[in-house]
Image (cartoon, rainbow, N blue to C red; front, side, top):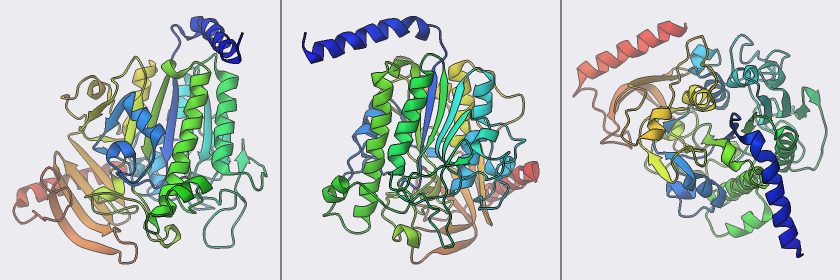
Length: 442
């Protein structure tokens, strides 16, 4: 018997063994969260200069959103929105969580806690950035297992916090500091997640796989740096790191497939917000296409993100959805798909199950609100009222667009034609919408 035949036979025997276990079992869930990835920086979103075969394959076997929004334009707030199903303001994380800040209140219920209560084994792998204290680290927020860094970003080889000094080592396993100098952090993430899946493959699991890529520092694989050597700087560095990320996503999903779990695993992918134009990110590298703004801006380029969901045999394949959706929606959507009870408390997210079923279904959101510092946005249908919004499109010449500005996104994706004077009644209505929303969480 050839090696290939033996491998095939072993695979078939394994699948036959676990088939009874999978039958009637709740699906596994893996949420993959990229960090600082531009709105259109995936091949399936039209990027002609990027190689992202694994994300493209995920989109081919799932549903890709073209009008999907992060809960915020910065890291911690966006993560709070995804994990709690609430707007960051309502969740108590309006901005980034620093080294000594409390972080996400322990009183908040995360999706991990809901899944845990439903019998799921839960794991956080990667970036956290929602607190450093006992009640706010991952093990205090519904995760049975945790491996990664607690603050905003690390050097991928030394695992030291990458910011202005003095820096600190930031790598933990279940809240205990561990040291692996020289090991490439994304590789360790794949190893940790694969080991967790192997250990829990006979029971439902939930993994929050929060990458720190393509967030600075740009530390792409040599093969990808060589591949993109002819792209202009800093696009070449960013592209190499993004393809490095895509490779690790491919390895993770390949491990799921090798264990025979693909058809019983829901995979969600999105970026936490738009690409960075900060100095540490070489003032750019990412791409938002026609959309104005980038990370830290509530213009479209800061909050409109790539988003994909796949569940082979259960959800449509190779389809797109144009309805507006928000990262807060993953919480109730995943609970719906997994047959887990919805939380008893109020959340801002809405289930997207009807949207998956039909491309003509209405968006579950007639309106939505964002706030980041002094910036705020009130959205109703295609109208978007922006107040004191930062334009971070160009990293070297950032500016704030003062006052109220109204845009019709169906006709002006660039957000350059201010309609405030033409539609004063819409401005008034959306201001009231913002004021009422603000009162709800203050």
